[in-house]
Image (tube, rainbow, N blue to C red):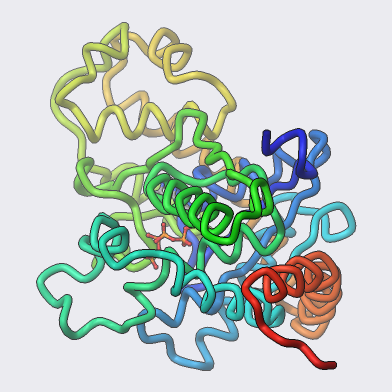
Length: 341
Ligand code: AQP
């Protein structure tokens, strides 16, 4: 139903909450690039309002916002082909987010595993925004009536909650199909890139040690060093993926290789069957440097002209608002808000 009624539109975003990691690149940005020109309208966002759900230094937040915009562009997002902007410049996100706070149920929020992971044992002290994050994320997606949402596996539950919010709104206000049921698009070998020091944990921007992640701005030497020191085990690579069960660090490096080289993990394991780490890790480091260095070089060039990045974001925000505002106005009308001007 959603596809027939709504334009095929992709929405996704990334928080400017620190330097981008290889996980953000493979799980998100690279796939955003792949979806351009594939019969979708593509809307990509720097979700700065999500970033402040945990403390951000204001100067660093501005820097990280521009740097993330630079990473999108350097990776291949074309601001003329896709809409590229930062969330706080389009007020419809916050406005629809409030309505969704009144649609979503507390019990739904209590089930969000990412909140539990991020709040840990400190749940009483974290911001209310961190708790309500999935409701704002639903607004990000639905204020564009987006139908497809490319994300890493960690965000699947939030897209499912978005579907629940859309369905409840449509049902409560008797507007079938007003909000679409967006599809999470979670595919490829890098759905969940893991920490280089502990293959059972996700690679994150905010992880404690820099050695556990690859940052998009790391030098070639640092990328090679981190991959060389990545935790592995003494066994060589097997000839099939099943035999990597129980070897999370080994599986992670194979998946990273596959995602960087646009192959399946099966193809990588058959190419490197029997290889020792002394052969696989340097090959992976060469591949990672080959793919990431041109992006970080281009990012640095773009960051030399922050005013140009700001112009691109402003233009994108105008285009985004042109889609979002009529949808928000219709939503206000459905909810029963009087708008006298
Ligand atoms: N390790 C990962 N593997 C695959 N995909 C990932 N993503 C993040 N980490 C991985 C995907 O990147 C997109 C943007 O994520 P985000 O920055 O908005 O939020 P996050 O998932 O909380 O990312 P981080 O790096 O863990 O940030 P911090 O440490 O600040 O909380 C999403 O599509 C996500 O799936």
